[in-house]
Length: 233
Image 1 (cartoon, one colour):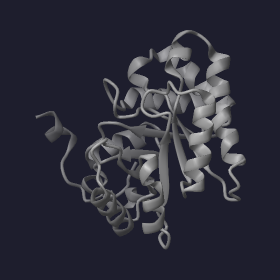
Image 2 (cartoon, rainbow, N blue to C red; image 1 turned 120 degrees about the vertical axis):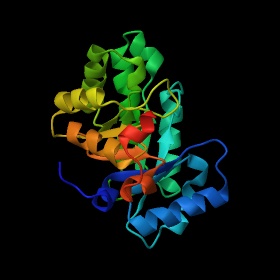
Image 3 (tube, rainbow, N blue to C red; image 1 turned 120 degrees about the horizontal axis):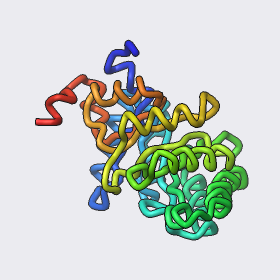
Image 4 (tube, helix red, strand yellow; image 1 turned 30 degrees about the horizontal axis):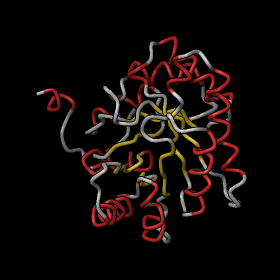
């Protein structure tokens, strides 16, 4: 794929989910997002009202996380989180699957959990479409499990499948992104997230089939700073 660093901005969720993030950090994140015209900022739920206020007059969307980072909340809790986030101004929801249920083979429960969030976006009293991304946390899954999880998310009505929370044992890999794209086809999106710190790595993910990148290093990516080779040193 031939794409310049700055042209990649519209595919990046400029992310800050650290537990130590401050109000000033979020303000800086939003300023950068507006300057470089990122697709969205992805922040913890507590900061959604602030981000929404700061980005009201921009093209940058506000995204937040649900059931984060373990996915072990009840479906009712995830649905409430979703409605509350939308009420506060979030336009995109990145939810974590119920990993314990998935690993137990309770696929119907996992699908119902995702569908509870998808349905909550439709009953939140907001007319515009809300995007739901399902975080699979691929570092804990075999290839067969990645395929199964993708199928479940797609069947439940998700708009994207996403690799990672950034809090697992590893982040996005080209192999996982490629497998996810092959599984879901072109009907829904694939978001690569976790460990993507420069333009080269982001480009690799796009070439593998991602159409959205989640990164805390968005500015480094779109300014072309650093290379994948440098990251290995």
